[in-house]
Every structure is written in C-alpha cells, then in structure tokens.
Length: 124
Length: 346
Length: 133
Image (tube, rainbow over all chains, first blue to last red; front, top):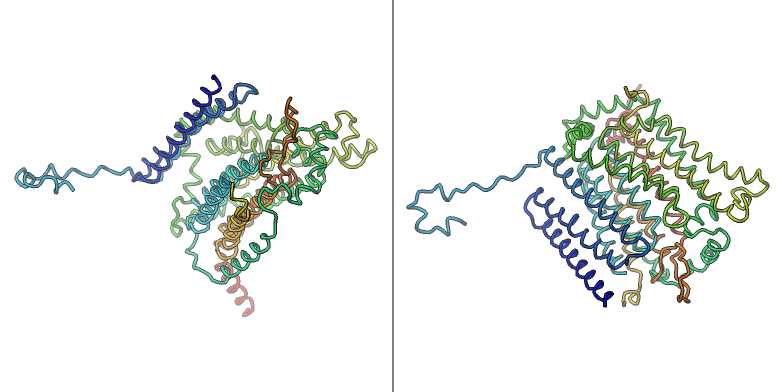
C-alpha cells in the first residue's frame, strides 16, 4: 500500500515537473523578447527540475543515500540556476539588449467623438 | 534507442547552427551546449566516466579557451560563400561511411564482436585480479597503463607547446597583438567585441550576486573534484575527471573575479611545475615497479593483496595533478595573463 | 521495441551526419577558429561512434555491482574499453584544441587576419615582392 502511494506520488511529481519543463520551453519559443524568454527558461530550471528530482527521489527509495544525493543536486541547482539566469540577463543588459517599451496607448488620446463610433476597430 | 536518436537530432541541429553562425562568440557558446548534449548521450549509452569528462571539459574548459582565443583575434567570421567541391567531398565521404557501417552489428547488439574479444577478461579480471569495482579505472590505470602514460605525455607536450607559443617568451608580443586586435575593432562587427570580452572581469566586479554565489559554490566544486579523484576505484571517476573538474572550479573563480586572483592562489610557475610532477609521478610508479624487480607498471610488485590498488591510486594521482595543472596553465595562457604580471598580495 | 528490427543503424548514421557537418566546417570555411570548431565537432562524432559501439541494450555502466541476494542471472555490463579510450581522447582533444588556438593567435599576430584566403593573398604578395627584388 505504502509502495503504491509512493509510486503514485512520484509519478505525479514527475508529470508536473515535465509539464513545467514543457511550459517553459513553449515560453522560450513564443515569448516576444529576450527578457521574457529568460523568465520562461527560469521556470524550467527551477520548478521543472526540482519537481522531477523530487519524483526521482521518491523512486530511488531512502536507502543507499540516493535521496540525499538528489537533495544535494537539488540544492546546487537552486543555487546555480537563478544565478545563471541573473548573469545572462545582466550581460544582455550590459551589451545593450533593449527592454521593449509598452506600445503607447494612442486610443485614449483621440477626441471622444472619433472613438465613440467604432471603438473596437480603433483598438486593433 | 529513441532517446538516443532524439538527442542526436538535437546534436545535429546545434552542429549545423555552429557551422552556419557568422558570430564566432555565439558559436563558441554553442559548442558548450553541443558538449552538454553529447555528455547526456554518453550517460544514456552507459559511459558515465566519459560523460563526466565531456561535461567538465567540453561545456567548461573548451568554451573558455575559445573565448580567450576570440579575445586575442576577432569574433566575426567573414561571410563564407558556398563551395560545392567541399560539399562533394563530404557527400562522398558520407556515402562511403554509411555503406561501410551498414555491415556493422546493430546498435546495442550484445552479440557484437566487440563484446567478445578482450572485454570478458577485463570484466572478470577487474573483480578477481585487480579488486576494483570500476572496470573503466581498472582498464585505464592497470591493463592499459602504458596507453594512459602516453596520453598524459601528449597532454604534457601540448601544454609545453601552448606555453612556447603564448607563454613567457611571447608575453610582450601577445600583449602587443591584443592592442592590435583592439585597434581593429572598427572593422569587426560581432555581437561582442574583443575589448568588451577583456573588460568582462571589470563588469563582473559590479555583480555581487555572482560573486557571492560563486564563493559559495567553489569550495564544493573543489571538494567534489577530490572526491572524484579518490573514489575512482569504486564508482565513476578518476584522475582525468578530477583534474578537469578541479581546473573548472579554478577557472570559474577566474572568470568571475580575475585571472590574477587565481594566479595568486595557484601561480603559473607552480602550475608549470605540477604538470611535470604529475607525469613524473606516473612514470616514477613504473620505475618503482622496475626497481622492485617486476615489469614496468606491474603493480603486483607493491604487494599481492592490494598492490594493484596502491599502484592505481598513485598513477591516478599523477594523472589528476598533471591534467588539473595543464588546464589551469592553458587558461592562464588564453586569458593573456603572464607570469611577470602577477601582483603579490599585499 | 521495434527500432532495432528496422536495421538498428540509425544511431550510427546520425553520428555519421554529425561527423560530416564537422568535416564540411573544417574544409569549406576560411576562418581558422571556425575550422577548429569543425574539428571539435568531428572529434565529438568519433567519440560518440566509439561509445555507441560499446553500448549493450539492457546493460548497465561498467561499475561492478555487489552481488545481491536472490539475483542469480549475470549482470550485463556495457563494454568499458571504448570508454577508457574516449575518456583520455577527450582530455587530449582539449589540449590539442588549445595548441591549435595558440597557433591561430600567433597567425593573427603575424598576418593580422585569421581568414585562410587572406593569409594566402598576403603570402602571394610577399613572394612576388621577393622575386622582383
């Protein structure tokens, strides 16, 4: 019974970890600029990897120090991955990769009479 | 099988991008990713020792060496026009290789001849004669000890070559070229100019996050290298892996702080001496077995019960020292740090 | 799995593809550092080929396991010999890469360029000037 529960919990953690990795890679592909892409990649590094490691730790059992080793890996990952993301973003900023400015909201600058008629099409 | 193929597709894609990128700085960073993918492949193919080495060497040291060389030359490749004759050569080679390999045993076939020639003796002997659990270490340091001595000598010779080309004697000249490279900044249009690369340590000084976290990590990296060195008999590890991990830790320190900071704890002159010490320790072990009346590198002379163990430990220590010192010295050479530049700590 | 049945050479052929990319980079590019990158890719392909030949389906890494109670069938280990050869080859490879890069740095110092055809042109001009003198 305990074994079955551990297995189920482990698979759940592995599935969620993979899901976060998938979402992270999707973000890297779909996000519009460098900084938001880094943000997406950061999720893969931390949340995805940590959940997968936790799932593996449950699979590994508590003998032979496997869990301890995975916990150490997890600790180093939590220390190094955010630092790597930080270094990447700082280096990009130092080399002049621009933070995209929000598109100015021209619609609200128009006089009321012009926008009142067809507000929706102006917004496009 | 499928995981291997998927990773190989990624490896091919990264290789194509490396080949096509005109910005050599980005291509050098991609070689790191290429090596990391290869390390993943080695792990899946059960070659854990090889994966260890590739992860530390390819993703760490080679990339840093490329960046150093780019800092001394130029980071932009001129537009490369397409050439059909090399393509023809490549297509013909590829056809010949595919035709030739189609006769080979299938991937992972346990009946392949390679698994039935000397391998069974090595697997049995590692347990019964050498008493070492990691068969890779047993073959590397004992069965094929001559071979490994040769490899360490090659590493030593390459280090001497680099020192002759970029080291002490060429010190002033190298600095002169660097200035020349900086002057040619106007022509090259890479993403990162050589000047910026060299100023990187300066930039890093303003990065407290990196400095603090690297200070936290480096003791563990160095400790891990010592563990890998000492644990090579029982699990994946050994002198080559430990040497490159140790050097990677020191190089990380140099990247974040300053090559000067590394040179203060590990002076280039000490590194140069240690390269020779490592090779001599390896060769000396062989001479010791000769003096004890045995054959060259026949560790049974150190005692039948655990002589092999002592011999392997001595030889692996020699390999570790030589490799670590070589890698650190190469880093010094490519970070344009010259022995006479080292400032003594106040 | 049906994959080995359909030939089982796909892993080898993908590695051959990696090797060819390295070879093309090595012989078709003029930039010397790009050539060294091609050489590195080529080397990785050779290492991959050797390691793939040592793999056994269902095998474990060649670190001998303690005999556990109740297990009677012998453990299937992957072949350690290619691992030994390739592990040293990787370290030798990085030393050779460093040597090649050092030579390129000296070429930059002597010719002011690392593009092969430009170096050839400079040499040609030098020879012509010498023959005229």
